[in-house]
Image (tube, rainbow, N blue to C red; front, side):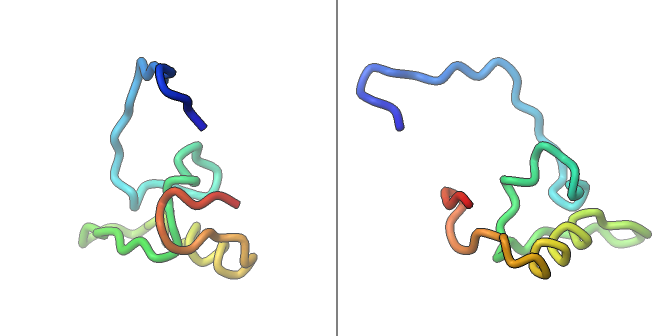
Length: 70
């Protein structure tokens, strides 16, 4: 938790489509069970769907807001 006067310096932010995030990506904590990502048509593979299913089966997926942690 930050106190008044403290800051966090970010030097590099990368944006990527959520559907490309798979089980072994560093961006996994940004995916919540109740997310409803857009999936582009014509793709054969959606790593995000595999991630969502695997985490649902394991039961270790934070629900609700994106500030939850587990």
